[in-house]
Each structure stands twice: as C-alpha cells, then as structure tokens.
Image 1 (cartoon, rainbow, N blue to C red):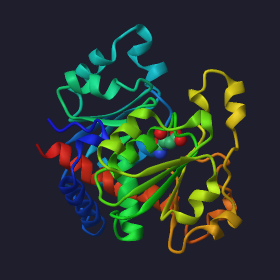
Image 2 (cartoon, helix red, strand yellow):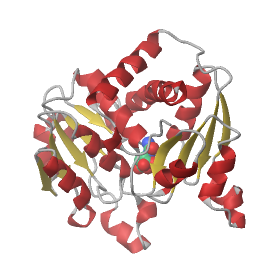
Image 3 (cartoon, rainbow, N blue to C red):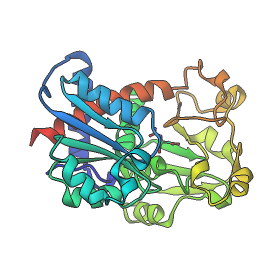
Image 4 (cartoon, rainbow, N blue to C red):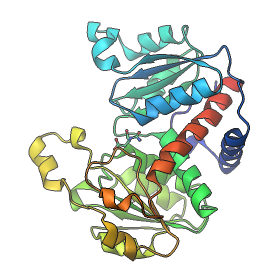
Length: 300
Ligand code: NCD
C-alpha cells in the first residue's frame, strides 16, 4: 500500500514524476477519482492542509468525509485509540489524510490502516506533503533545485515543515542550507546527522542578514506558540525575525521568499506585493501537488 509518512521515503524519480503530473493536472482537468472517498481526520488545527486536500479530491471528482476537530469531537474523547479509529475509518474511505499531535501517529496509523494514510502533519515530527509542495514551488519559480542555497528561518526546533523540507532537499545535488534561528530554537540533531550522511553542507546562525544575501530561497516560518511548555518561553522568541520591505530589498537578485503559512508577524503585509513573495502561490501549488499525490496513492 502507498502510504505517505515521511520525506525520506521519496526518491528523485518519484519527485520528477509527481511534479510533472501536478503540472499536467493544472492544464488538463480530469475526474479520475470519481467514486473514491478521502477521509480527513484532523486532531490539530488546520486551514490550508485540510481544505487543499479536500479541494484536490473534489477537483478530481472524488468525495470527502471530514473531521476538523477530532481531538474534541471524535471517539478519542471516549478513550478510543488512534489505531482503532483508523481501522474503522479505513472502511468508510479509500484513503485517510491524518493530522495528529503525536510525531509517531502517521506511522502508527499506517501500520494498521486498510487504506493509504497521508501524513498531513504529525506533531513536531514531519509534514511531508508540505515539503513536496515547497519543493514543487521552488522548481516552478526558480526552474530547478540542484545547486541552490536555502535559508530556513524561525522556529526550527518545533517546525515540522522545516524538518520535512530539509530531508527532501537532501535528495538533490549541490544544495546548501543555512539554518537561521535563536539558540533555543535550533534544528534537531537528527536533521543535521541526515544532512551529514548525505553530504549536504549546512550552516547555523542567529543572524538573518547572513542568510538574506546568499539565499536563493528564504523560507520563513512561524514561531510555534502551541509547542512551548509555558507562555513565558514563547514570549522570549515572539517576533524575533520580522521580514519587512527593506530586508526583501537586500535579498539576492532573483531569489524568492516562501512561508508555509499561517503567518503571524514574521512577514509584514507590506511585503506581499513584492515579486519575491511567493507564499500565496505556494499554497495554490499545494492543491496541484495533493491532486497528484491522491492519484498516486489511489492508483494501486
Ligand atoms: C504548517 C503546519 O501545520 O505545520 N502549516 C501548514 O500546514 N501549512 C506551519 C505552521 O503551522 O506554522
């Protein structure tokens, strides 16, 4: 069965075919998933990921069953395990998009699910479909991934999109990564070990200005307020990197500014109209990538 659990599972050939299919679907609408059902089982808040999966499914002629607040309104409240829920929902739907607060949830669900599981974000673990749409965005906007420098900014300790993106970029050649965060929010050692093993050079710094000038992609992220043990810790980091128009002018010629969204105050709205700002387009590309993914998991 074709589950989507973590970025490490993909290879270049898969990515090439997936992205080609996403672009093809943009120009050639089709109803190839008619009669199929996607269940979205979301135990954590979401706007884009859930709705873009659901939009992707419906655009391909499929149908959707949706729980947007499974942590409060599903039988989890009565004490049901995730495994039991997934076993049952797998008989109501042909595939399950799962968002959960536990980093191990997607793998645990896939182990028992009778249908493909799509990891739509698992705690501080991974968010592989976001990474796929991030890389697709870079390819569409810059024409390729090999040889680029990517600066990842913000809460690299808790941010799952950064983690999945770093793993995925490790598949390409000549990529350099610059991790920019305060000392207390540095990226995990598992990521650094993976990059070392794959020969991907990276640097770590607290200074945003160092990344601004060299990056082809500036990937800004939200400080993950909900992941801090207490509010005073969050207050320490709140607003630490704010990108304004002046900073965007310092960015390398031809570079782009990305963000998985939602943003709070880390990119000022005055930046939105600048040509470097591609974060809303990024969300749009997400529907195409999820269409291609749904086709792929339901093909077999
Ligand atoms: C991200 C997430 O949920 O990890 N959002 C998303 O899916 N686009 C990023 C975030 O919440 O900061």
